Image (cartoon, rainbow, N blue to C red; front, side, top):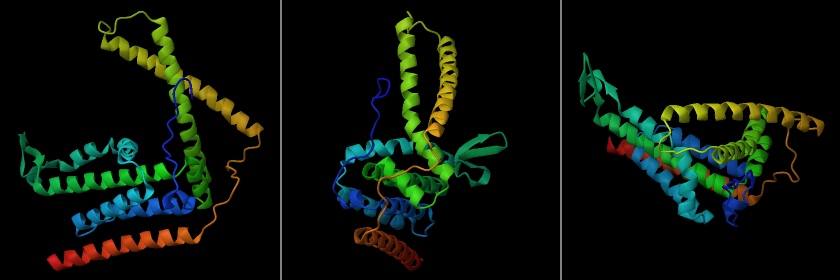
Length: 269
């Protein structure tokens, strides 16, 4: 509990193969999936359909309830519709259907709509992969994997502290809002939008000052305790036969899907 706010724990305990994988193996599987989703393919529908089937199989293997997984994937999809909408827009002769605005025609085309659909599909699959990963991997193990894979120490440090203190700042903001409500007699229906904006700006400024002061205290506290910029772990990340088998199986699935979709695209042509 932090300031009256329950810290959400995205990790769902379990005994599946994905839960028992080495943290480095899990992290590499996620990265390989995101890279595969970003690669172009002449048969987009077949390739993305294969990746979707692989991810659904992984979700079933992990035993994660679909409803809980969707809740974890939704935050990653906030910007996806706006990006897809931007991909739909065409100006000038590229617009098959549109509205004339002065000398320009702003609209869309069948090709633009297809590209937007593919982009939205990729975003949904990426969100599904990320949601599955955070459901089977505790954040401490993610930091451990990032350190073991020799990612830049500054990047690992910023990621770990951001995750930890994001909830602290949320709790601070919650306490400020509760204090404001307890000390203010107001009728929300008669409050003007300008007054609400001024109060919100004041709260944001106060939160920034409190956050800066807290960061100074945390920095000196960490230095006084001998923190060197690297997080210590009680046990190392040891690879096992299951880790190697899972990595090989996932790599083979991606390779087969990529080759099959390209062969199918050549056959159709």
